[in-house]
Length: 372
Image 1 (tube, rainbow, N blue to C red):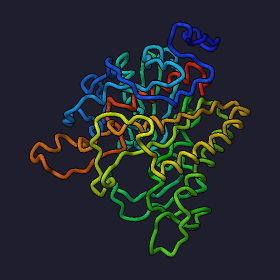
Image 2 (cartoon, rainbow, N blue to C red; image 1 turned 180 degrees about the vertical axis):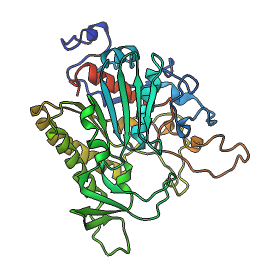
Image 3 (cartoon, helix red, strand yellow; image 1 turned 120 degrees about the vertical axis):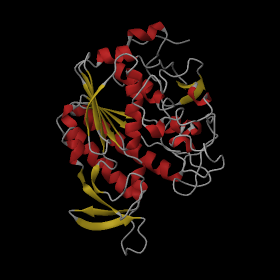
Image 4 (cartoon, helix red, strand yellow; image 1 turned 45 degrees about the horizontal axis):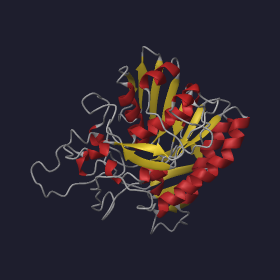
């Protein structure tokens, strides 16, 4: 039996019991009500994540929801969210998973009010939307390292040269915009696993995975820790009293290979706890995130910054069924049922498991982040 805490009146109505609840420890349970939206009711879905339109034949992955063990997590309430965010601004800062996440939020909110796209960059990676009835602004800034980086890749991820990554300089693309946001969701990710040359003070200091370069291999973990330290220092010292979420790393579910080596993800139901082990690289990144967040959180509160951990790693690990797989492109087997096509086992179908990340966001915002 749940006891009522005086944190939220709604708690007594049977929704969410606060106190010691860990929102990130739980299970995926069947949800016959299904998603908020479909690929027909939301126009914000990028083609690579539009799994139903692209011909994915199963739909069972749509009928699960994240359920913490110690409390009931309410579903996202788009009307209430927009009312709370009147005259506010949100920024999602990171790589394509951050864009995947913001599209999920857009789709949910579009069931109440359609957003107007007011800006996009040349490559359509960074965008701004406005909800005129609520004067609410939603932005996504594509900056895969959050550091200054010279990237030599095409849109398919094919590199012509090694990334030049400055470990002592933040990417001004997001730092110049940071103070415009009341709420920020910021995340690093898989880009740190790519081959890169590391620089400090514009001088080469080493690399990650650069055989034949006669450079010291410092490892991706070295760069990731330095990046998080620099990012968090900027946030807590900025003088801007935002509500900042640090979203943790997202595991992929490639089997029998990787992105460019024939990896697939054909599962159709979630894992149960204990059925999946986190890859070593994800475990390393997650541990770095927890350690650096813990160091920064206290300093943030002293400086008036609300800094919270959005720990989506474990709940994402349990959803191997939620990726586009071969259905990142339209009808990939239309002309050849046995065709070998590239699978996407990193990003998430929309609608899909990533929608639950917004349930967590809303719970933490409504309760001022006191659940964790």
